[in-house]
Image 1 (cartoon, rainbow, N blue to C red):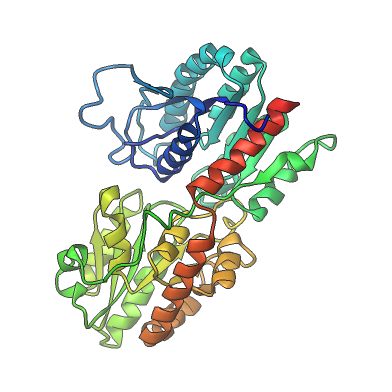
Image 2 (cartoon, rainbow, N blue to C red):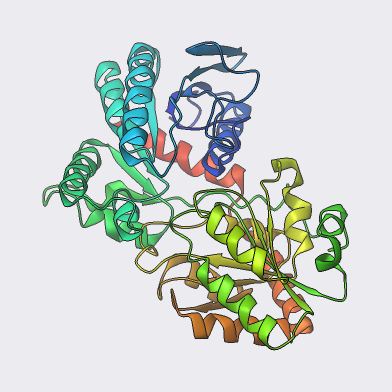
Length: 420
């Protein structure tokens, strides 16, 4: 099968130009597959992630088809719903899944393998239906373990709903020919949910790509830092969170650190929260009363490099219990930019192992306010140490698997399954 050109069916919730991180990951991998001569059919949503409404220029149709030399992209209406309205969001996922799933089932007969990405978990059901219809193997890709992450963050509070979602999760795992996850911690989580007769080797660790070619170190004195105003002055240390402002991130730690520095009169350290999401209002309220805490809105993907470079220290936040169900892809981007990381994560999580291996930052326990504030103070007071961590992080990112290597790992998995 080594020289065989595959026909790959992809079911994913986002695809560029949608700005969701998983869409960027899926796009990068698909581009590598098509560059190698494989045919790809993508079934996804219309762009909607940024504002939780269909993007300008894409509305007015239930579905749009984009034909390419390597295949096609079919984009279905996602029925956007606010993250805080769980029932509406579940209904939106269900509606999108029915449309996208029917499309995938129709396309399955001309494909060799089906690849479905979660969340949403429902795409695993659609992927299984397509795989059954086309008599092809199903590879189920887990970016975040659901419902574990939703339960841990309190988004999913109903025990009955969590139980139903858990049964669906196990059903998909057991009926997939392979389940790919981002870390060994996630693999252990998934393997524990398989049937006793299932082969645990069907759970395969393939990390998201670290794109050290696209993101490179650059001067912190750039246009984004200038946009920050006086808080971005070069004689000040910028501690930044950049990413989704969601339920999974304990922003109270950043607020507490800003309060401590303000109480000490330390105006030389400024905290910047960059992004958008359900936690925006609480961060905005804190920023109004703290002169050293700044909330910056969503930035376009093409500005990612200078956003990352503008900070002297990046923070990664995950609430307790999420270390085995989620791996923030932003860590690789920060390392590629040559910047250090302070992570508030579970012990023995993939992020802690990554920072230990790269020696590009420090970790503290989740939700430990005192340890977090102390680590920020120590790191901010050691600019030479920050610079050295950044250099080590960049060196690590350069040898980590990029889009080409990750795409090849998937292709080898596909070929092994098709060969059976």
